[in-house]
Image (cartoon, rainbow, N blue to C red; front, side, top):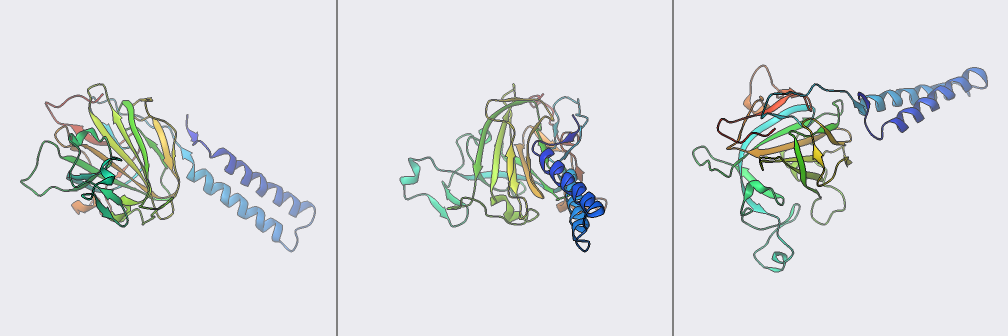
Amino acid sequence: MSGLAHGGHAPVLITFMMGVSSLIVGALIDPLSGLIPLFGILCLMMSAFFVNFWRDPDRPIPKEEGVLVSPADGRVMFVRRERATGRRPSKEELQESAIEDDRLTGNWVGEACLHPLSFETEQRFEAVPEGEESADDVVRAAIFMSPLDVHVNRAPMAGTIERMEHRTGKGLKRGPFRAAFKKESEHNERVRTVFLNDEQVRVEVTQISGALARTIIPWSGIGEPMRRGQRFGMIRLGSRVDVRVPAAAFSSAVVSAEMNQEAYPKGQFVQAGTSILFHPIAESASVD
């Protein structure tokens, strides 16, 4: 139902009631040199901000077979073909000297998962040079969410949440917090969610906090079935969402800022649950 997202009703109502009460007190009892009415106006302005921030409109969900919808509102920063070059180590591997130790992003094993498209753990990716494509490549679309966009995130396809994990920078309880529109923000505090459908196709969605957005709120958990376009969480204030899909199964349906198209200087604007982000490639498995 259209309205406010989970958690939004209390701050909206509290600030609204404080604003109305202050205006009544200032008008009927004592304005205290105008301070009480001013406080009331500020509370009402804050209530309006909270309404905008927590808004959660209903969206028409595409019924076209096989498509993946955007999990977030915002501008498409880039769409890039990538390959995995490393992964997070197991507990046993952490005892080995071959582990790569990065000051900011933590520990890595210098090889991808045996089956990179299983997304069984967080992997390190790099862009694929033209002419060096392989069957295990992924396509990543990065979406920048401004503070004015809807912050509710939706499932890109029908399926089950197979994995969900929270990551921060090495040795940090929270953070780091780089500006979400910068490439380096991919190592910010984040929640990685893997969706698995009935045809065993996996899609990885990573909710990334920004310089202002420092709270990622999951509403669903591992093993929970999801419909295409169903709400599964939100990020407070401006942030970023990355989507990785098998390159052999999907092709991009959007224009990114890196394409330098005059019609989309900041990248195409997409809406969560409504805008089609990827089309299935012919001969690939259906995803819905």
